[in-house]
Length: 579
Image (cartoon, rainbow, N blue to C red):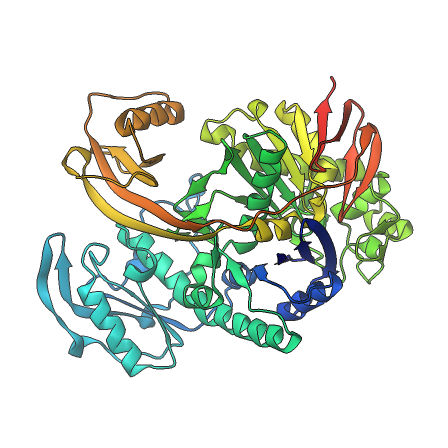
């Protein structure tokens, strides 16, 4: 079995090739045209005659954050066509009343309504397609009232739009997010339509490039941690919105399980950003709605929290003279000043080099220039730079642990990404954690996660009914439950003692439970999973006692004083705090 995984990041593109248990890795700078980076990484790792090719990309994420999507129109139920502009009544920032929400992805003049009305129990007013106005758009999002319960009107409207505009990318809400809460459903549908042409264009270019290079078309990582075909990803771009970060979590979960730590926090620090997630009982925690670029996206996703802090994050003094790090990044070109590629602004990587925590040469053949790093930082204290970025990442780890009712002291920290192992021990000490795991392939673990990912197709069925009145439920999957009268729900696994397990989860999260109160079932979530091929993971045998700098495949580990460890049978370096 020859399996290839390629993850395109903001600074580097990583490749992992697994052949009958042998793992080969490569890391190349990311190019402006990502399909060129994919081919370069595949060539660097020696990929030929591949049986399985999986891919993670940030194309959709970057397009949304930079607002580089398609010219999009929105079609809603007449009288409700301005839902994107009305949003919820919540403030953009709780303590800043003047803070504004981001402008909707669809202009007001492209938000239109169609006559016809579906209610909770069926049709209230017949659909009148003649009231559907002319549209000027590359993509069209359709979201009608109660389409999550009865999609007849939406199906008719989307069919008519595809007939009228055969070149437009049309998305209906029941196809992508068949759940209640109108604004969130509309927002998700618009994001999907807005990104569709961008991601589809990239995937078509990638498919053509792979065909020319003799590579099989790749499977694409979903935000949920599973894989989709190239065609599925092109049809619904929102499912791949967090493609890259999800791959790293999948790889980290596999590494932590092999090392005997079912509970772990993942810490993926790359050149541009840091992604963190919690793993409990061997499974990454999931969520069913998140905000990306200021827009709610109600889709299954791994519960990854991202901050703009990476090795390439630019250091500056704000107007008050305080030291700030990120979110702006030097990227791959020109990169940090010490790369010697023309960068002049100070970065976290420059600070780590001056602190003696980096070797003379990084993976990819990048020779580091100490004088350039010193010149860029000037009078800035490199230790203070690292302390500031560490504080930002500690806050991120608390978001996925303490704020979710999890005690980080009960978890191991899995450090990966090119810069993750440099900072991991300091973060673990700050959080009271005793163990840090550094995989043998720490620098390319996201690519390894692509190889190890299952094919996964998620589905959801909305109920919004009293649990006592619902019939038989699936044996496996998850249920969104809440106390009757509550506005929001908790997700618990399906199976025996469902009600009691909800009460227990509510008590763990909010500090109380009311077992006399009736429960409401909001939705049931299931997934069809096809397991990935089994792969063997190994690495060199190492013993380390801090303070020491340790060079690994594609990453560098800084082991401070008070930490020591050795590698396990699968090549994972297990570091433990001695004091």
